[in-house]
Image (cartoon, rainbow over all chains, first blue to last red; front, top):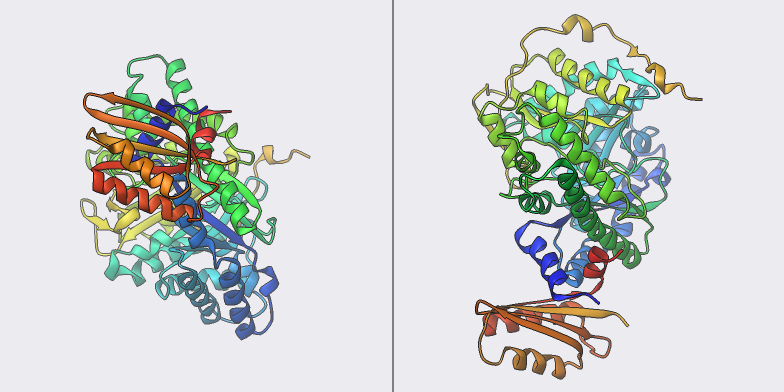
Length: 454
Length: 90
């Protein structure tokens, strides 16, 4: 039987160490909303989302009460809209109407973000894909809750460099259109290599075409829990360190599994996956960078950071995999700059540069996330940064992403404020040498040799 | 039978158990097990209870116990047992 000590440990994690379920994300397929008449598509999309997700928020709140665990976000991901709107949309403006419909539906059911204003163009772009991509700045600016993602490459297909170059322009345009709000629309836009179909985390969540009609995916969190556990083993060797992370990750993930199963049962929607990510927030004590410091670094970014992050990421997976029946999504440690006070401090102290962050993304989940760069960074340089990150994903057969904010009107030393879970970010210097001739070549980078496994 | 764990943590005072048990009795909640300690003047109790007979919603019990804790000056949590089972048992 459960004892007092175990109960106290769990409640301590929740009360003092920021243990929470970061998100319950309901994936909804919109493929059955496709029509050649735009008004019909808009109507069907709205009806389907507001029907399938009508009890999502209520169910999330009921589960919070039952187990006494906070569920921070309830969200929705949908089929990439380039597929849903492809037959009906004849212009950028047509796609923007779909974004507005998603926004309305999200508001109606009470979710804070809806993901899936997306295009999958890892090898080439259809006309609809390109139209959707070109509509992104306007779509994000005209909506509050819509998140957008574009998959630009994969290990199997290589990298679509035309897409990369286009996204360099689109990110800049997205920043410019929201320049009055510190270019904040950019935090709702992410580009991927090897994007997973079942990621519950925003801004990159979409409901892949390989998925069922509706599915529940859950993202857990718990950097504070891991850090507190590690405080108790200061000075011990790597074996003890790794075992401690693994056991803690197991406990954290079990909570996610429980919540996912309960949500699935209550909503009558199949359980998809638990995403084993360590997702930080700007709250004090909820930081991945602080774990790296606890492992033994003065600041995230110091020599040894990549190794420390590699072991952290690996142990989180090893502990988490056994705790859940299905693991998926991004699953790893997130290292967003603005959403993690320890990362912000590291940038401010001069310990962390974009180049070091890039190295860190080789060994952990996702990539260059929530970092601000000077607003006058050339579009081709942004495309170059994206291309580098996509190459890391392609060659290492992992997901990588770029969510970068060119802060219009700001330079190194300034900071951008996003508020809430998104935090704030100091503007980081970018390598000033040009890559224009490289990104302007056009075409695509072929798939790497080790993708030919058949 | 699905069990529920009630935890009471706070500064020790007269009648904590009596007040909590009275509430449980009034609401047809059966107590299966109680363990309690006092560490440095701090009252720490865990009860395993059966809420199958009560006609109140689980969420209402959570809120009412929380409010009762406020009156007594202690922190009362009421959670389904599964969260602890899942976390601490394979």
